[in-house]
Amino acid sequence: MGMKTKLFPFVLISSLLIIACEGPQGPDGAAGPQGANGATGATGSTGATGSAGATGATGTTGAKGDKGDSGAQGTNGTNGEKGDKGDPGTANVIYSGWFTPNAGDWQKVSEINYTYTIPEGKITQDIVDRGVVLAYSRQNANSVSFLLPFTLTTASSISNYNVGMSMDKVVINFLELLEPSGKPANNLQFRYVIIPGGVQTRANLDYTDFDAVARAFGIPE
Image 1: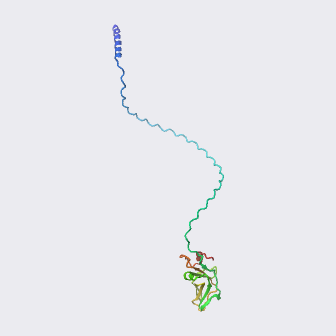
Image 2: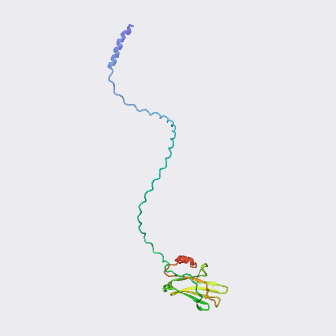
Image 3: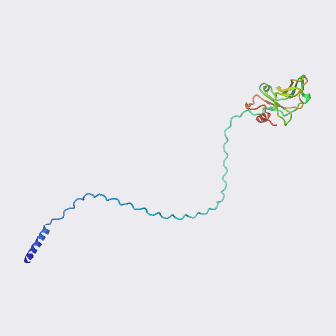
């Protein structure tokens, strides 16, 4: 036990010497390399969907507004371009109404040939040279019209009616082909249409149909 008392001052002195001999603190060392990233954590579960909001009430229809004032009248448009020249009209077409020759109006040429002449001052030499004369015959207003020349046949006769024109006149000709003493019928109606050479004809027009001809050339009934 006396020995332990003697060692204590020595240990204390040794400790002081060690502390007294320790040098100043050196600088921090370089940072070490960065460690590897840790594993990504698991994704969390999706949260519950919130409840839908209530539908808003439908708004009321607004009141009808007052009628607006009328707009100003627009200005007149400009005149269109002049159109192309049309086909020749029917103003120069010459036509008659329906007529029935009297028995005494037929001029006898021979026992089987008679002519009926209608004065027509509008027929010029140019129309005679270049125009066309059409004539139609019927028994009455409700019967069918026939384009001349046409042949009328009965039990005892075969009669032919034809038409021609000359200056200032239209001529209807009658010729009996069977009965030696045959004469023109006294109950036939006639009508003529004269188309001058300058009036354009219609290639697809049925000239045997008087109603179609009348419509095509503006001829009144």
